[in-house]
Amino acid sequence: MAFIKSIEYYLPQKELANSDIDKIFPELNINKVAKKIGIEKRHIAAEDETASDMAFIAAEKVLKNYHKSKIDFVLFCTQSPDYHLPTSACILQDKLHLQNVGSLDFNLGCSGYIYGLAMAKGLIAANIANNVLLLTGETYSKHIHPKDKANLSIFGDGASATIVEREFNNIGEFELGTDGKGYENLIVRNGAFRNITDNNPEQISYGSDNIYDDNHLYMNGPEIFNFTIEKVPECINKTLVKNNLMIEDIDYFIFHQANKYMLNHLRMKLDIPKSKFYNDLNDTGNTVSNTIPIALKRAIDSGDIKDGDKVMLVGFGVGLSWGATVIVL
Amino acid sequence: MKKQEFIDLLVEELEIEDNQITETTSLDSIEEWDSMAELVVISLADSKFDVKLKSKEISTFKTIHDIMDGIGLDKFE
Image 1: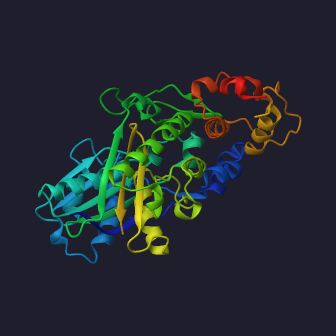
Image 2 (image 1 turned 60 degrees about the vertical axis):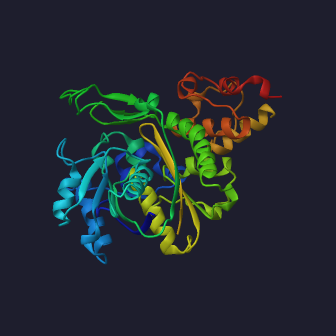
Image 3 (image 1 turned 45 degrees about the horizontal axis):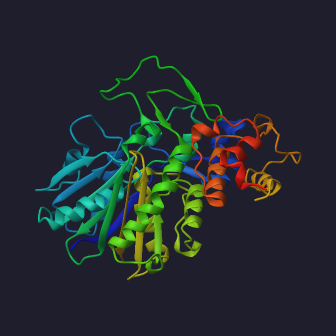
């Protein structure tokens, strides 16, 4: 009933390589950190380039060989919208010249692609839409304090576009979950309506001499790690049960590409062989809601995923929020 | 697990160059003890002992012994 037709992604031109970080923070020993987190460079949006600008480029790529008129819904996952209002998806509808479509943004991060697939499948199943354009776009670089070396080393910007079609039925059952108790572990505190932007925010030091303030992103990495250790295995087991599958039945696993160290820990904990597990954020960094579609596209293009393979997709992070499903390629 | 085995694991995982690390070594004196080290300790506690260490608890650790105490001294020989 719902089918992932095609996927494209876009990475901004500007790059932040480890050698650049080494010049700014020589005391960090980025090469040692990089070996653990598995990142060589990240792509960073230009000052005047927004998440929706990048999602537009990804969308144009995916719509190039597709009858635009068939799209009847646009979902855009971002935590870096153009404006407080209107929803960026409306601007994208106009720029993409899409007619007679419903459009909305949804605010999720690392679990966002899974939620987007779930909503696309739901819209199609409920006869609200036939062909959904699912977009993700993120510019965490704009949320990160310039002296926050930990987060600067981890995150990169990017966008993706996926067409979910009514034909066939290759998106399986979903397991989705939320633990709002952990909301403070990954947060930008100021700039919305709970706390407006502070013109003179206190500069706060955390971890190994990282600086941030409440106008910028804060991440408690160790607690996010604890959350994934606890929730991801549970989420995977529930997803397998809902899809009547054993873990051995899954041909390939794509988790949100948070960092190599964390992914490796999860892989070993779950006893998943390396050959069935995507673990590569070397030239992108953690691109939040974009990591899963980028990985999916790359694994299909490289032949790591073949026709008929059962692929488990698992997203987890900011919210705290998680979700998983199984798709058949 | 033997205490020395745990220390060896820590030294290996954290790539500590100082070879004089003992149970009483202060974490502040270890150059490689950084925020990445916290993830390594969480990972070791989970994979080797099935113990969950909270970030707040780790921040109170002063020595290698405190890490073992946090994991549970009964788990060490």
